[in-house]
Image 1 (cartoon, rainbow, N blue to C red):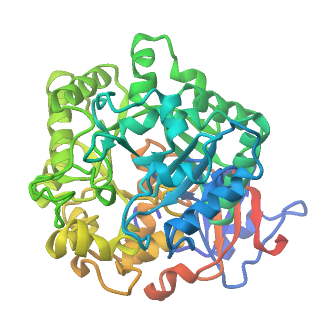
Image 2: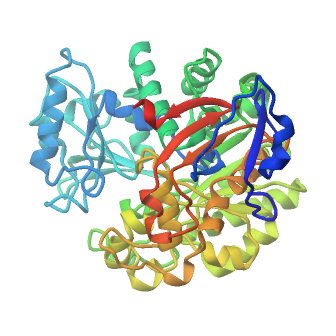
Image 3: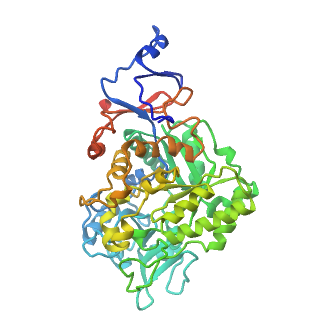
Length: 527
């Protein structure tokens, strides 16, 4: 993954750094009686996978929360099965403890709708219950959880969110965007032992998939302290990229009350602030310039909505730019991307940075003209390319319609403009599986086997760069991570075969070993 996409025969490592790359004869002088020599026997070595956007350690939440995912990820098919999964959790909880679930998808349940608070009340009225939608941008609460949050029929919608009510004005239990954040953070009040179990499950899972740098892309103060402290104690085998949330920690960062340098180390980077500008297209909260393909709740003009008004977004962007702080802004719909481009344009006009690398997270429905503006302004997109597999059919048939769906995650259009980008999985929205991500980026096949935008396909080498060196570049780590070059950190992954041979079999490739700083953190033979 160097500038020439070189393929070498051998590599030498001393301590945690690469000291030489080349042919077997080039490396021979580095071998002495104390050297450990590994023969990969035809397998393939690549740089460690960098999680360009996700929510570590969210994949470990299954330790304390019910898995409500539907195929192709899980096996919950209807609301009755969802209720049964939650009932199994009730048996292990004391009276009044939270019951949580994650990953339900209303468009994959037989009923084709969200569960209601009454259906969660049928599970328990003695426990507060909150279940999170697969998008992570909404959830459903039972009556007790709504009461704890202080929500009733008279509670106004918060800015950037909706407390959904039925035709009689009664709460359905569904909470969109900012309306659900209060409950989400309440459910994160967990014990140290539960936190350890979540960390261990997530860390081991990431390592087994070849991830060497994990990202927690939206942390509050508690999570920032917890993850940094756990890394310092050696409880996390991976490098961490932590992004504080603007609305939780932004004011403290800008005032100097919170010094991000206190949360940086040789294993942890905390330099980028996360802003959320809209929601999720599969949750109908992504903000579009034209209406959704299928009218939402009968409204043919519905386009979603921003979580922040354009001028407020511009104000935050300007303040962070003035402080010289890199931003990562979540934008799925093209109207939201318009807002982000406008906001960052204002920030650059007032307080220009020569190399800002603003990361536009997801960039799901980015138009051609928006890619041009990103290139001009110094914005770098990170595409959630596995959407083509997990939601491609429904984007085509329900959310976006055939024309717009074919342009989702426009990686080839970005390459045509020499617009550098990364790809990501947004785990735990979908499982941490980089080979699936690469397969989706290259092939763009849906779960039914249909091609979603053939013209946006890219090569395996281009896709690999988007999850290694280009992902490192996005976070200003290209001098240390992302490629196998002399002087860089020895973050390595051994694959059972090359991803460059057969694009259709990339997702079948197995990770045999994972190394961080030259130290093995996973070996498939040990399992």
